[in-house]
Length: 92
Image (cartoon, rainbow, N blue to C red; front, side):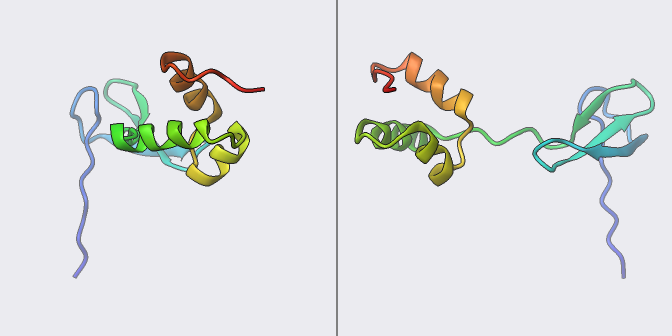
């Protein structure tokens, strides 16, 4: 017995969508034929406040930004934005 999963457009709630390649992150992209909207179905997961604080505390212990990227999988621009908003000073 097959279970069919029905997807809906995030903009117009139409079910008239088709697969349309992959995003740079490897997530499936879709195209709505009714409203001509292109997107992924699930929005990106955001970091919790606890996880963000943990990453910023790790940065204060003097590892490089590249090291934090590798360990936590956080994007460089995201980390840089967090550091600018916090009281932590950027290291070279």
